[in-house]
Length: 223
Image (cartoon, rainbow, N blue to C red; front, top):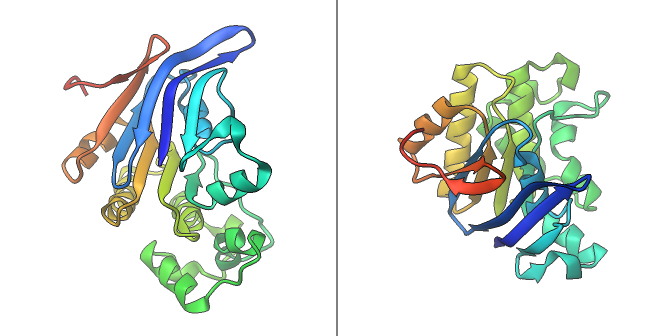
């Protein structure tokens, strides 16, 4: 579905990373770790076409990124759900409408029953009419996940989704991600939290990738 081949990224004349090869296949589960500034967020942006690599190729659902037209990119992004590290919402809209925004942007009406089911799945049914400023950090993260998957994407990309929540909520978010993976979704989570990775490996066959010395490596048992 998403494949990076010998990809490099340069910023300001300096190399961020190089020779990155990665394939996100249906049903795969990957963690991405490494020091701050090593390129984790940049790699995620390559995976949904927000950035173009300095070298190498990015194939998104069979199309090479540089050859995609604007309409191709828009269609592709409906197949990728992204949970950003700092999830933002429209504060004047209730939670349910915020979650349904991707449908609105795509010109589709939200099915009330399906939206209610999704909010219940992430444990936010009681907060459906709450405004974003009224939500806790954990509720915002679960709302961000709900918004990311409302278009039924094939791939879920999450950038530090548990960075601002406690351990109990981290495990709850992980459980939701594992459930999505068991539905056949490819999942890639960028995280600093090695305890989260250890918890996941007891539930799912996850591969752990690590940026080190500007290269992407398969992490070993030292995690």
